[in-house]
Image (cartoon, helix red, strand yellow):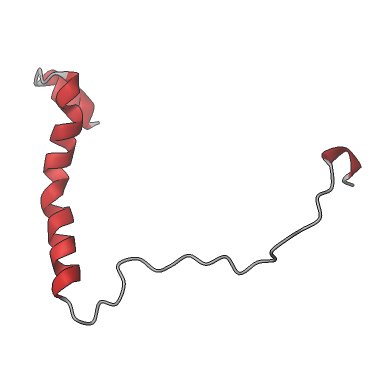
Length: 65
């Protein structure tokens, strides 16, 4: 809904992304700062490793039952 507010305040549409980002940048920077200063923090985001089967046989849709 922020775009509606920006439009009502007569901001040009090209500035919507900038205004959206400015409001969130302090939170992003605070989170980054906490991540850097916390010695117990090992990783910022866990790795996503697929553990399923490597290959599967393909069955065409018409032959599936």
